[in-house]
Amino acid sequence: MASPFVLFAMSLPQCAPFGLTKTHSAAYSLLAIDTRRLRSCITTMVQVEHRTRHRTIALFDVDGTLSVARKAADPATLAFLQELREYVKVGIVGGSDEVKICEQLGANAKDQVDFFFAENGLVAYKEGKILATESLKTWLGEDKLKELLNYILHYVADLDIPIKRGTFIEFRNGMLNVSPIGRNCSQEERDEFERFDQGAGIRKKFIEALKKKFGHLGLTYSIGGQISFDIFPQGWDKTFCLQYVEKEYDEIHFFGDKTYEVCN
Image (cartoon, rainbow, N blue to C red; front, side, top):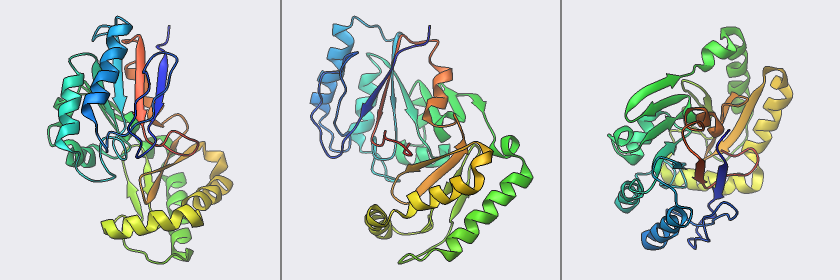
């Protein structure tokens, strides 16, 4: 039987955990970390339910959850994850590639958690050893991929936004990351674009145009972080990683900041 999958949406900057049980949700932020309250909350989850470390796993998003987008995680957050491993198995599920995740969580991040899932699990590690990888290029095919890339570049070229920088498309192993402003922007420019996008809906409109043009390709579009969105085959979102854990654990808890539609 498949493991129950419990979703905990983190509403920033709230940091008041409610009871983490099978029937309750939680709203809190690891960014405004209150490790004592969070530790108490999850300890209660484990003890009240009489779970063992081998029956329950906690999976954590990276950007906006364990750290500010593209910033290094606070040492207290990383220390908390190690303490949590005394009670349950711990996994990381990031949309970025493994290099970027390790920049944020530490060079040895793959060895500091039980499961490490980069690109939503398209690159999967267990106990520091590679489990599996998936390739967007192989799945989509070169001709369809080229058509998609050309359309994105033309759309960005015609886009009228306050500023543009460089690296508008980042080709990852299992997905495309598209940034209307360009990933080479500074942190200040990231913050400005995020505020602008909240009102102008640049990324949402971009996604709608892509859905209309490439609806036949079976792709999913997911807004994440401050400046970009991801493109990947349907089913290759963060739930993709569940195939590697759902048979091992009775319960799976996911903690993330963006858990609504078209977000990752």
